[in-house]
Structures are given as C-alpha cells and as structure tokens.
Image 1 (cartoon, rainbow, N blue to C red):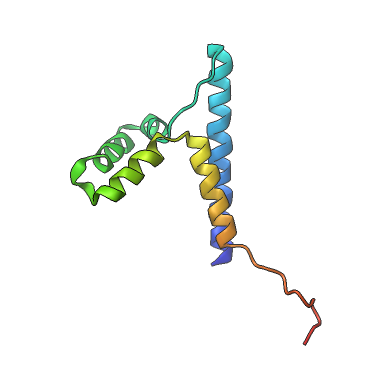
Image 2 (cartoon, rainbow, N blue to C red):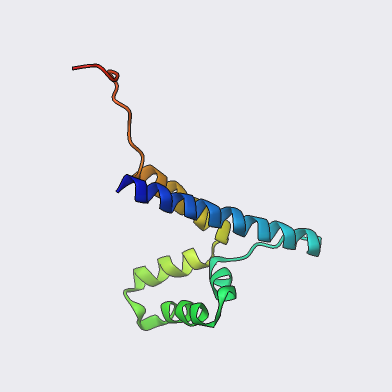
Length: 105
C-alpha cells in the first residue's frame, strides 16, 4: 500500500511540475504572471473533462459544504493543488524508522 501511495505522490508531483512549467512558459510569453486554475487546467485536457468539471460544479451535485470545498479547490492554481496532493500522499505512505535502531529487541 505504501508503494502505491508513494507512486501516486510521484505522479502528483510530476503533474505539479508540469503545470508549473506551463504556467511559467505562458508567463514569460505574456510578460505578466499567468496562473492556471485547476478547473481551467482540467478543461484544457478535453471536452469530456470539461463536462465532468461542469457536472461537479452544479448545485445538485451534493451537500453545500462539499460544493464550497470543491469550488475553492477548483479555483486554486493547478500546480499548488498537485503539490499539496503530492505532499499528503507522501505523508500517508511514509514509513517511520524505528527509534531504537535496526537490531534493538
């Protein structure tokens, strides 16, 4: 299980680096800061993902607390969301070393 969590953390970290690279290239080209939100980044992948994001943002998709959290996450920069996800997955898959050492009884 830890291996899967670490691998998912690696994939999220790769997505964060990719999103940050795209944002930095666009910022240099536009000569002003360009930060892509997570919703815009998902929508740029294709029409199926755009429909998925729009279906999540509908008011009948769930409780009000879920919708507020979802709207907040989708409005955040894509690289920051993926970095936070990578950190959470890495912490979940982290194995603490024993305090006494390898040969302690």
